Length: 563
Image (cartoon, rainbow, N blue to C red; front, side, top):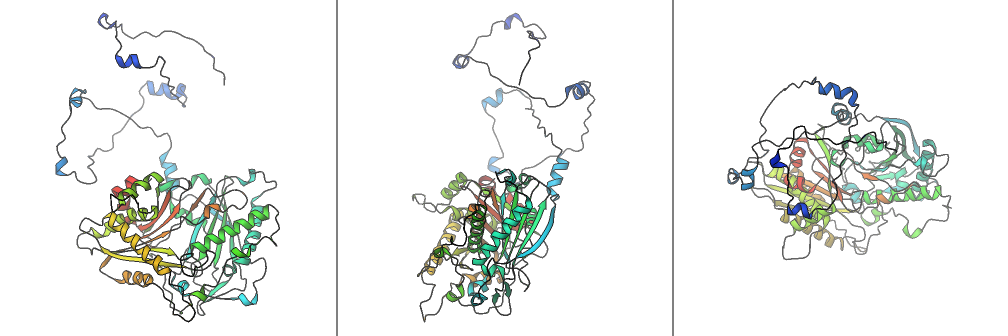
């Protein structure tokens, strides 16, 4: 860039400076300041030849439409009603301090585009992907376990986002079609080991028919850039994300419904998203994440031209025999608590690493102890307190509440259940309590959650029966079911922690995901945690009624610790 100096001149004051002001003595602070100029540059991107002249001639007219007084959201306490001014306040001039904020964008267009869901997703193709090698006859009937029967009838959703333009990553002759072909082949390979995902659930028989009917693969394209959707924090319109899923979250109860469905969506920028739905009838998030990592490994090795026939490590091969540990009892399946009036909203609340540390210190029961509650329990505690308080502080409402948290059984039983064991292998840690007139205490709630999980972990040690012994399942599932039917309980809040699952490690050959998200699930009072993109913070995906969500967003603790 070349800058040509056109002229230099001295500009004198418009009126002469009086003789009494001709000598200005510098202060001690002036003497201590560095001998230098303070630089600044003002940029004016508009064409001043056209708009400047219009402004100088005072052509702008401003019409006042309304004036009103805005009061504080909560009343000021009597103890703060009188504010005495200081000496410096007295010495300050009697005037207002003016400021004007300018927003050059057209908020009527950009806000409306976001709020009114202008993102359009076009489905290009849908097909069924079968396992690369046929499932043996001996594995054609997969019986579900007791824990599978107790799991909700819904899909487990997750979406992985890859913001890079994979066409410019050094891969030659890469097209959207070739990418999808690559993902289909690697998916077929992964399904060989995760064969129940290619089957169909026969609810009358309480088993999955693993006859290789196939997993659903949907190819789609999106008319916006990926950076218009991710990185928005709590401003993301979560309902939009469901458009990146191949089917509704609750579509898994029919004999024709696939046990696994994926949608690959290509964005206008060249990035893409992979939306995954796995049936909760046969899989929890641990199983789903294991599958995603396996699929990504197959895809990357396929891209690198490695030999797949001899690469599998049988010691880490997924196991599909949970019904041998916990035989099913053919219990009637309970439908999920999906809202039929569509008044449930989902919001994302981000907790930074520093904010989580402050919450842990605030939630510490014994101030003299150096031991802090865990990161997860502290985040659950601050959210749980806010949600419980919304209902329990209402006059006339019951003060009793229940909090529950899922506990992964893998690696915690005696004998230990392998972390490669597939199916639903989790328990529910539930605890009831009573809130005070002002709500629930944070320290008490965190201790309640911690104790309930500790009890479940202790129960895990003895939950797997020895030969000839009767199987024992903790009462957490029953306790949760009873709470929903108890009119004396005003609030039931369910928590799940997905932070430790390695979804951010899923590299299909073009790098790891830039973001992993949940979706909108129309079930009230559900909170699940995912790690954020940095790996240091936590994103809380909170599902509440519209009215409760508005109150949650105004909660003092939520406003202080989230972004």
